[in-house]
Amino acid sequence: MRTTVDIPDPVYRRLKVRAASEGRSVKDLLLRGAEHVLKSPERNRGRRVTLPIVHSKRPGTLVIDNAGIYDIIGFP
Image (cartoon, rainbow, N blue to C red; front, side, top):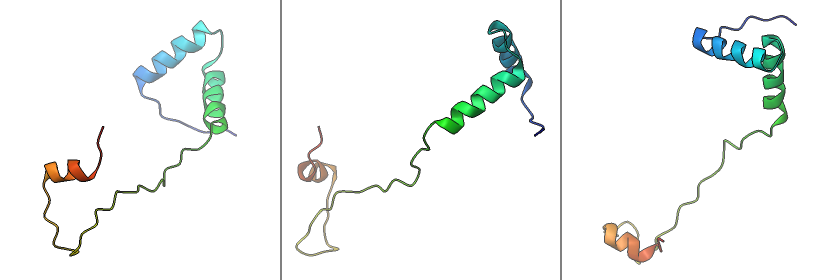
């Protein structure tokens, strides 16, 4: 399949130099890069973050400052 890709001039110059130094064509270098990206495992982008729960005897009334947070949550 044939496609068109817009590559900024400075990036293309670096790509061309790298391809020449490896004795390859720019096309070959681009295909190797695409194959590398497709072979690597996908990143887990939807990772859920869990936050510590601070319990209160009267929910909604907890007044806490930074020092209190450091007392509740053991920071290294």
